[in-house]
Every structure is written in structure tokens, then in C-alpha cells.
Image 1 (tube, rainbow, N blue to C red):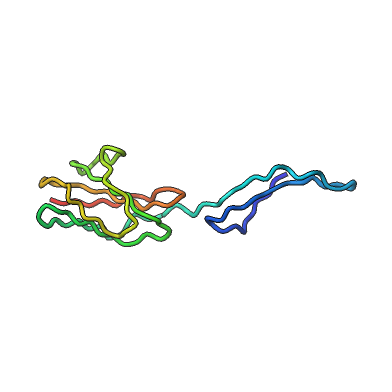
Image 2 (image 1 turned 60 degrees about the horizontal axis):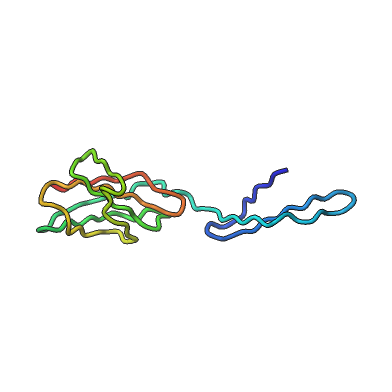
Length: 129
């Protein structure tokens, strides 16, 4: 009374119906149910996150995370955060860098996570004195 399809590709829509079968024949098919498998959540934090200040701008750079479609950037005035949406949210980007021209001249603390349709990775943190 159950079935697991182990062959679908991530991001492809599939449609499933069910029929009961016995010696007398097959029933009418159930209404179709659609499903789209999700990719795995990015498992790693963005590696080698660096933050450098040049004048009034702070440049963040990191390495790509396998399976990520983009990155979420937060900024806080404290090393311990919080890094919460919406107050500390800066932006999302598909790039592997970001230039923050709205940071204060005080110390800034950043958190970057990788994201895809299935969820968000662990966070990488960087400090700019």
C-alpha cells in the first residue's frame, strides 16, 4: 500500500496515479498527485569567508558551496548577533562576493549562508574591525 520512487531527478515535476488491480481487473485511476523532489540542503558553510574594509566599503568574498543557488548575508553590530531576518538582513546574491557600502565605520560582523530550494546551510562568520 505504499511506493517509493527512487529514480526521480531533482527539480523535475512528476505525476502519480494509483489503480487497484485484482483478478476481475483494474479500478479507475485515482486523481493525479504531483511531486517535485528537492535537492539536498547545502551541507557546508561558505568556505574561506573574508571581509576587508576599503574606505567606507566592506568587501565580502567566499568559495562556492556545492548545490547552492545563492547566498544570504546578514550584518550585526555584535559578534554574537543576532543575525535575524529582517533586522540584520543585508541581501541575497548568486555571486561569490558582495560589497557593502552601507556599513558604519565601527566594527561589523557578518554571517553568510548558502541556500537552495531545500534550505539553508550552516553559517560562516567574518569580522571587520
